[in-house]
Image (tube, rainbow, N blue to C red; front, top):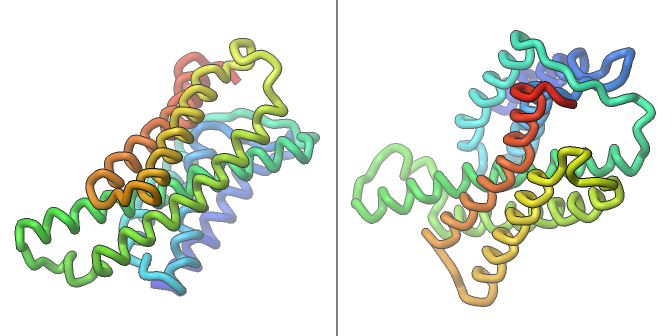
Length: 232
């Protein structure tokens, strides 16, 4: 799987380069953004699986990345960002995409943990149970990924404040409010884990809630503005 995974992300990277890097600037439309996040997620999981038991997540993320490639290639879309973007804005974009990608990984990890917990309670020995790591390992990995994603999300929000002049005029009000809501949810999750000893379903629910807010903040607002309202 490692060799095929490396080949896949290499080809995906080539397609992304052709789709995003244009003579007029950077095409960062909705489907290109989805494809880029998909590529980054698979790359992170592939590299991390060399050191931690995350390779089973690739069975979920490979099809998602493949679907993202199809959408990117066959649905015309475009939001050109001029190549003279300031370094600060480029760093903000990288931080945002990295945070979304890691927290997406944590969400799938949370869903797999939920499935694992349910199977154990129902005492159903399945192939899934034998291929996944123990519950404690899965939960520990989930928290570690959320911590890193939360840190990057914090940096993203902090850096983003430098580029806000008018929330309404820049169409950033919903995105900002939902991003802050997601940050608060993840902050409460980590507080509950470290201070109140939260485990299991409570952590899973908060993790899913945080990513739902984050998903609506970025892709939700981007979808509405670019594909429905046709604004950039």
